[in-house]
View (cartoon, rainbow, N blue to C red):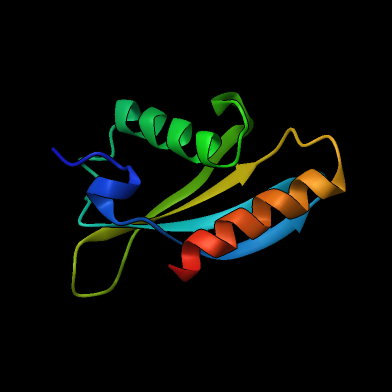
Length: 103
């Protein structure tokens, strides 16, 4: 079964909202169905996102999961990444996610 990691699913981060010491981002996980995005798979996804922005997985909260309406199967996963100590850390995480989205 595919896992929601960058190499397997082709994640794409599209939306960013900067909050009070947090970033909300929407990821598109291509080729993954809701049935495959089990609680265990969600934990792997949270660890990948957290690792990417140098935060512990406990700072990543999945806010919503929805199936894409596009032709190819996929999910859109909205996450909140919190626990940042400064606005500079938030800016750095947001920039890193935007750089990844541009590739």
